[in-house]
Every structure is written in structure tokens, then in C-alpha cells.
Image (tube, rainbow, N blue to C red):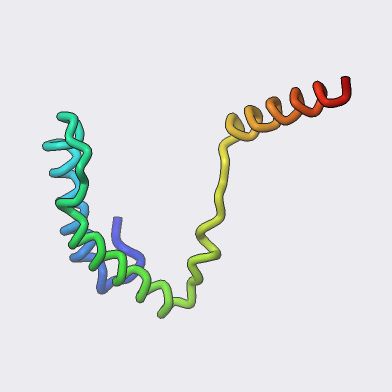
Length: 88
């Protein structure tokens, strides 16, 4: 899958390669330090932000916090039970 900005495609490939190498070579073996890919991620992230500005896409439009149905049900059931106990 390509990046949102055509200029960012090569950076995305580099970051994906770094992440995949870290994930299989370190994370799956118990090492959770993910700083090895941080430099390329920062450069890629800036490229994506620039592409979003150029395409007039605002971050707040995509930062909405969505929950799954299961999470919603769990939150409601705990709210309902605590509400019910307050009425007693």
C-alpha cells in the first residue's frame, strides 16, 4: 500500500522494512525497545503530515476515538450497574 503522499512512498518502504525487521527479529523474541526505527519514523511522519496539509486534510478529522461494539457494551454495563446501585 502506498503512502498518502507520493513523495513519501520511499520513506514508507524504508520504515516498513525497519519495522518488520524489528518486529520479527526483536519484538517476537521479547525485546520491546522500538527505538531502532524512530529516526526513519520521524522523517516519514513529517512527510505524511506535509502531504496531508497539501491535500487539506486536517488531523482532527482523523483523530476521532472509535470504540468497538464490545467496548461500548462493557462501558455501558458498568455504568448501568453503578447507576442502578445508586438508586437503591
